[in-house]
Length: 349
Image 1 (spheres, one colour):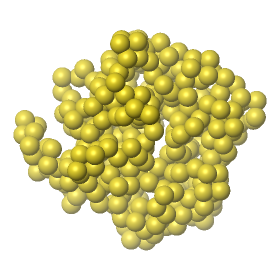
Image 2: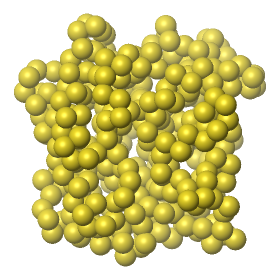
Image 3: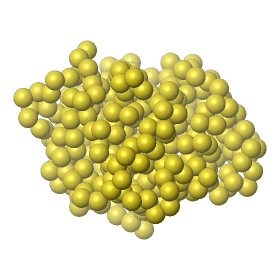
Image 4: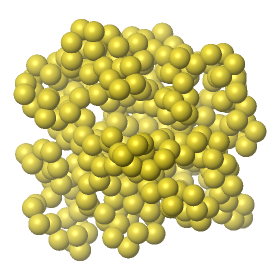
């Protein structure tokens, strides 16, 4: 039996097959396998509608050819999957550069955003991408940012404005992922400040991931921005809800991309990835979030009306162990909770 709503569309992220993987962790999972696991998931006749992709090798080469873009589109279409948001590889190890770095670093950052915008356009032209954003961050650490908060935020905003000019030319929007491991984005206060200084509403916005934004309330990497007291009792749902309401009220107006996720209130790093919000399975007994209820804080306005700001929502299983990711039941369980989120906070369109 199908769910009662058909929007927002339900997507699965492909980058958990790469992020946190590598020589000092676990082997990456190839794109074909990630797509196959996504396509095979089914709950009462409902399947995933699409995928969000990582614009980096070995999944998708940053310097892609027209034939490679066509092959990617065909892979998705073969499984009746759309392609939505694209993660731009803005980091130095893959040819990008710090958004608050040298002039050359910032040039590389914008250059890689351009390449992802080009991929986005190619996939639109091929008919598999009708919505979604280009996801960015600052490609900088909180420790480096803290050496000169005002100056570094100004530089990030300047770089983002240049990236916005590129995105606008391609008819794209940029979404800055709020994550405690990115300088100038490592707290809700810093995130709002950086977006306001960038001052490109309608072109750049916020990408909220429930596993990461929970850490915002706890003040990881930014104790001055904590909305929950040290030693918080997780049984106090009223206090947790109040903190999440305050945060979402400030960030929701900027939110244009959304990841459904679970977190146990701890951080995790794996492979080359710095410690950030820990993604947990929907069935994890230590999960601190009421996924459906707390997703509504992002997907509904203060008055309870739907924002309809995103045509799709995505599950992010970043840094899940390969053993977990290779089990089909994992993706069935994830799809099941995604359907519940859409039934509670979606619409017919």
